Length: 451
Image 1 (tube, rainbow, N blue to C red):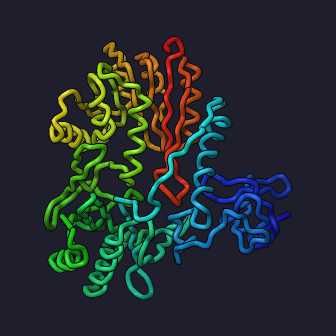
Image 2 (image 1 turned 60 degrees about the horizontal axis):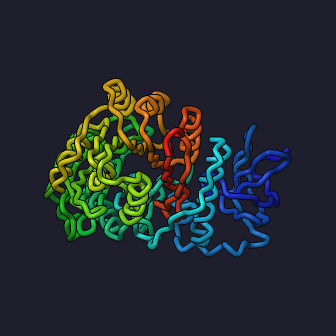
């Protein structure tokens, strides 16, 4: 019987959901971090469970032609990236195949995914950075959680984020050390500084410090060092989060200096982004994703579109320029206010927004007899609740455009739509998060008695 700390030669067969290699040992699946298909990896077993085994490659006997030397000194211990040991073309193919396999195996839907739209730029693309803070032997640690843990790895620079984020992290480290400001300890729920949170537009940055308290000592000095580290800084915000939770931001926000928002241009539209706004983290690939969603909606200028999970109105407003009318629904009140303001900001008069849970909103619209031509959904990772699917089906749109960040829940929901008379005919994968295991997908479904 295999046991923890055994080192065994295993043949890697495929890539798993989290970017690890997949092998088998005596009929049991083994997830091998750092393994690539076709390789025989000397695998150190880290955890032996009843249904699966987890390990990592400590030696490779026949390196794959897709293997490259990682270009980040923190890889793979920080847990932020999963594919820095693999050529980008191979990463794209692994993601495309993952989406296609999930749709077939989980959803039972025969839908090919012939295309994945890769990124022109695989570095420095993140416009939102969340860095946990912890106490270290040599001072505060600001970085990322080690893979499958809450141990903070101190990171001086990250190739996924703008260099300004690293400069701001360095400034916060120095300020904490200079003024003996304690880092948060989630085990004891003591200490003060929990996270450094930074947003970026194409020209500016917005910095937020998340704290376990209602104030900070030496705020003026903090603002001074942050402004010196990042001349493009537009504002500094304090987020109060005194709850025992893994949720990063607290509900109370206070501006310490400057503005509490940024403005960014996306798909030819201007959006105001606050600290708490939902906004895709890769602007360039977001334009690719939303452009594909608009294309698959098949709009001619007369249609009524219902956009569930509309956030600050990004997809809604992109579609409004090609539709007769767009109705957006979102559960977060501040996001609805942002969406309404964004419509006004862009002079769009054929879009309206309502606050409500997607299931309640969809049910209310269906009960009112609303029959949109197209319904667009961009749900969180958990996908659509069954009642949302039912409400969409009752409204009987000709087309449904499903934007997904999780292939497994997408596949499950496509099966539910198929059972209720909707056929998924087109799927395109989009690599929104290069060098990580995440992938986005856009699917178009047709009502079976439609075209």
